[in-house]
Image (tube, rainbow, N blue to C red; front, side, top):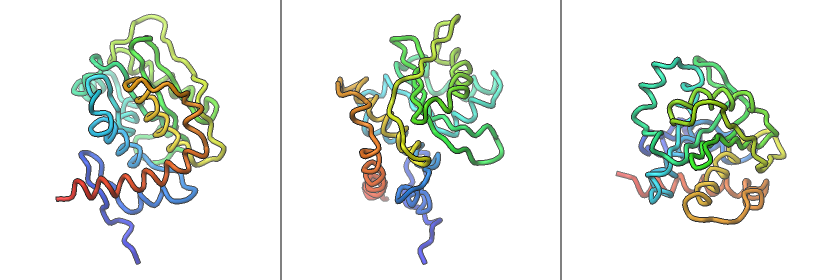
Length: 218
């Protein structure tokens, strides 16, 4: 019997096991580990040509932002250099507990400095709207967003048709937006990120993990 705890990939801060990879195969809700790896890969590999513009905050740090106080937050976020980034990406989970893993839905929050606004892409019709607003208010001083009226825009983004693909939608939407922001990609996000493309994205991510594991093998 295969050991689901076997390590498949150790990439920077991402440690992926077989049990994590299996979530990409079939009708499974993907976890923070897969999303965290994709965010790291975007920042350090795929879009490293725009590393001075982009910041990807890992899901576990996003959870910390939601629940931490101001002083703790400042210490945690200072090394990320968020005031110097044009675009800040965060994957939001509806779990509000420090002590227990869980949650049932992922969405994407992006700070766009040129528009001085937070954009929320929720693949399930604003299910995480309240949490996105909390997160934006916590982040405002740390990205040096203008004080005063907070701009949080619920975007007309791609919508999932089931209860388990939200995390893959978040990854696909973040990738598309990076292309749009940094590579002058002009095709609409709603045309590119669809239920059909997300099914293919699962296999692409599965293959990417093993490809990166091979490339970074010691």
